[in-house]
Image (cartoon, rainbow, N blue to C red; front, side, top):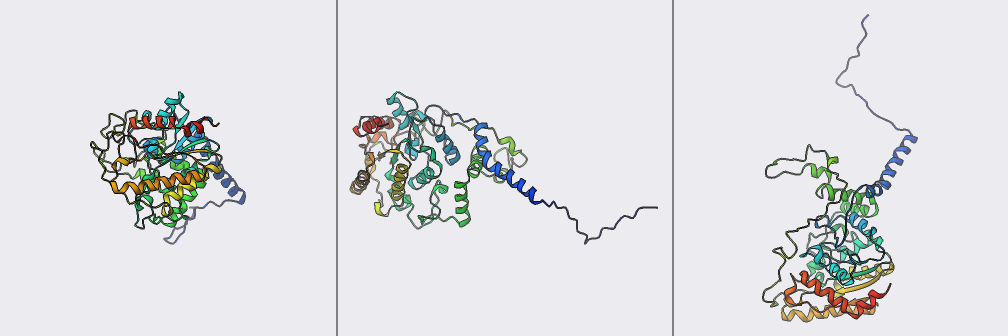
Length: 385
């Protein structure tokens, strides 16, 4: 007798489902929680991260805030940390041409001063970096750079109402205080807040920066090719093969920086000033308000802070633009004095030692380090332990 085979009609519904019991859901939740809590910690043990003398976060990893946090956590307890924007990082110079390098040279110790500058920062972003990723800075001596260039116009101050795109948007305040030119939607802002509070999300961003050209895996997979590789060359690659378990180091010979670079040259062969800035007053400046909050945040965390104001390139200022700048600089120094912060306002460097409005060349950093070392305020502050 032949077996009856059920007929399958077009309206037949196939159900292939897996229903978990309450205990199984608890097990799944426990595994997910374990991954969220342990993955970033285990990764630190597995991934090789070489630093050494004069280390600074590579330019390509400027937005890897998880790595920045890890760097701070691994510093020697006696090191003084120098924080700030590209002036500290050294936009036009090699790692051995920065301010921290020459401070170390004068101190006779390779790790007395640590370069914790990040390229592309500004006070509103630096505040976020320290607040959310700088916990390891607690109870350390800190040199904080104050770059007045960020108050040179409403656009630089981020107080203009016209929408602007700028670096490190994930570090600025997302909801309060309001930044008029920052127009991210609510979902993007909430995503940033979640990343700040869930280390696993910062770790995921680290993997994207280190292994996937700062892209998510789907975006990396669909990245268009060029030259001899048209189409989408990453489509059939195994994403796991991209994980090298090693933080890439910066190139030893950076064609964009250092004395051999075409960019490493004085801002002007004549030294004649002609630039006019639309200076923002301190009481109206978003960047200055962020810098004030940052100084109090550091003090509240037990940091012994020395603020270095400048060195700004006054040589490029038009004559009528110098008085407003001097007033701004003096008001900043007065506020620091009133709030009892150690401070130094170094004299401007010779014109030929600047690459632009605020970045020294290699010799400029050497001279600046010498100015700081010879300043009684620096000597008194540095002697405190």
